[in-house]
Length: 81
Image (cartoon, rainbow, N blue to C red; front, side, top):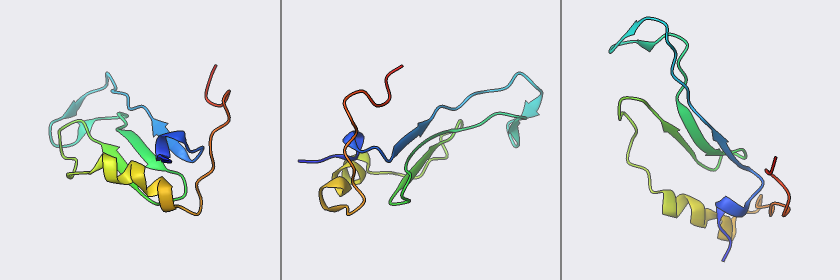
């Protein structure tokens, strides 16, 4: 079975906080949320700091690779540094 985790279009952007002032309403200035998504726009999950993430079925998203026409398997050395 194919899963999105093995596709070259899977993208993860780590979030980061910022030491600048902010508030619970606006968040820290300059802070960025983490993101896990398909670069072909089949699905996207934004991981917010305050738990304001909608319910997301990651298993269903990963299984979309089985029938995805854009699925391209990662090479064995891709993503290693």
